[in-house]
Amino acid sequence: MVFSDLLFLYIFLPALALLYFVTPFNGVRRGVLTAFSLLFYAWGEPVYVFLMLGMVAADYIFGLLIAKVREQRFRKLWLVLAVIFNLGILGVFKYLGFFTESFNFIFSFKLPEVSLALPIGISFFTFQTMSYVIDVYRGDTDVQKNFPKLLLYVSFFPQLIAGPIVRYKDIEAQLDNRRVNIEDINEGIYRFSVGLAKKVLIADNCDGVVKTLMGLSEATVTARWMGAVFFTLQLYFDFSGYSDMAIGLGRIFGFRFNENFNYPLISGSATEFWRRWHISLGTFFRDYVYIPLGGNRHDQTRNILVVWFLTGMWHGASWNFILWGLYYAFLLLLEKHRLLSFLERMPVALSFAVSKLYVIFITVFGFAVFYFDKDLFRNLGIMFGMGASGWTDIVTNSVILDNIFLLAAACIFAVPVVPFLAKRLTEKLHLSYGVQRIVKTTAALLVILAATVRLCGNTYSAFLYFRF
Image 1 (cartoon, rainbow, N blue to C red):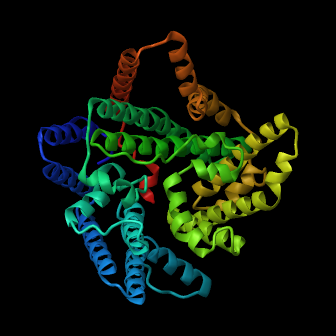
Image 2 (cartoon, one colour):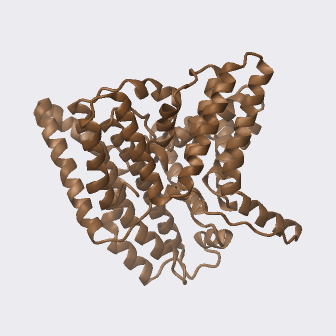
Image 3 (cartoon, helix red, strand yellow):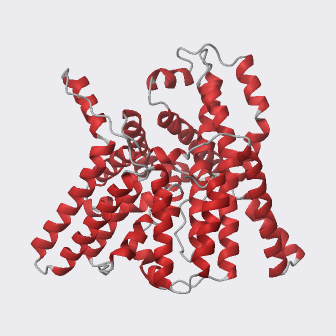
C-alpha cells in the first residue's frame, strides 16, 4: 500500500482517522496506530512484517541489556552485537547477492548466487532501530521498557518505508503525550496534499519522459542530458513528496517529524546540497559514523570517503551507487580544500551565478550515475558525445517540446518561489488567519481531487526510494 493509492486515500486513512479520534485513551490510540501500521506494511510484505517485528524485539532486548549492565566493556559488547545483528540482517537481504556476484566476477569463481526479495523499507527501519540502541548506549535517551511503544516508534506507517529516518529521542515524549487540535489536522492535510501533488502531478509525469529519453536506442547527447534533468526532478519531487506526506500524516496524529528536504536545488555547493537533501540520512551518518571516526578533527579525508562509500552502499547494491557516493566524496573534498575559497574570491554576482550552475551540473550528472545501473560508462560517454548518434534529433526535440510546461512547472516548484509569493501576497492583502486557513484548505482539497482524477486513469506507480 502506498500513499498515492486510492485504497489508502479513501479507505485506509479515513478508517484509521475515525477509529483513532473516537478512541479516548492514549494507550488504546497507540494500539490503533500500531495495528494499522502493521496492516499497512503487511499489505505489500505479508511475510517480512515478521522480520520487522523480530528486529524490533531484538533491539528492545539489546536496549534493556545495555541499560541494565553497568560495566562499560559489557555495555559495549551488547552494543557491538546489536550493530552486527542489524547490519547482518540488512546485509543478507540487500547485499548478499551483490557481493556474491562481484566476488565471482573478480576472482572467476562460480559461487551460487543468492537472490532474496528486498523487504520494503528495510534500509530505513534498520537505521531507526539501530539508532535507538546506540542512543541508549550513549545515554542520549532513556531505555524504553514498554515494547508496544518501541514497536510503534519503528512501525508507524508514515515514515516506515521511505523515511524520514526518525530518531527515537526526537519523538520519545510524543509516544506518551500527544495533543491534536484542529490546527494540527489542517496543517497535516495541507502538507500531505503538497506531497501528493509533487508525487502524482509532477514526479509521475516526469517518469514517462525519463523512460522515453533514456530508452531511445539512437541516443543523442541532448536526450541523455535532458533525461538526466527530468530524472533529477522526478527523484526530487518523488522523494520530497513522500517526506511531505509522511510529515503531514504524522502531524494529523500528533507527531512532529523533522524536515527532510529544504529546497536542495537552490544550493551553491555540493556541501550545501547535502545539508538540504535527505537531511535525516545525512545527520544519521554524521552523528553515528563521521563524528565517531574523528569528524573534521582527525583524518577528515578518510572520514569523508568512508561516509560517502557507505552512503552510496545504503542507496543500493550496485557499483553505480558506490561510484555515485565516491563522486560526492571527491566533490566535498575538492570544495573543502580549494573550490569554495576560489568561488568566494569572485565578484558576488559572478560567484552566485557560477555556484548555481556548478550545482545544477554536478547534481544532474551525479543522478545520471545514480540512474544507469547498466552500461554506465557507455551512457556517460554519450552525454559527452562519445558514441552518441548526434547532438539531438527530431524525436528528442519532440519529447522535450511536448513536456516543456511540465519542465517549467517542475523548475518553478523546485525553488521557494511559491511560498515567497504567497507570503508577500498575504502581507500585502492583510489576510486574516481565518481567510488564510480557508485558502489553504481549499487548495489542499483541490489538489487531492486533481490527484484522484489522475490516479483513476493511471496504473500503480511506486515511490522511487522504495527500492532502497
